[in-house]
Image (tube, rainbow, N blue to C red; front, side, top):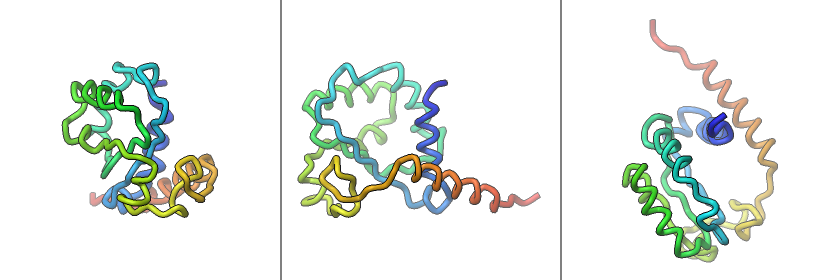
Length: 142
């Protein structure tokens, strides 16, 4: 099934209206990424989701220690995504996360030099439970 894991993480990330309003920042380790990690068909299908079809409020998407050719991948993505979406992707160094962007070590996981540790499965389940509670509590006028 296409992008099931992507939808699951989006549902967990944006688990209630407050989170949708607040938005999120995504940090991805991009060191060693190359064309073998890029699938234009996949990106084209994801663009339909991220460019307005799903309630996503992504402030920034930081690509940490990305090789320079990631810039070329982002140019290809401009064929599918709205320019505003592509502009949210920013190539940064590991040091930039702390020195320029203000993240603290206790906020980030060990793979980006931080100390925050939580099982992704546990986090996802807790957030999906929160989402189900949020949906249950929403009442629409007749």
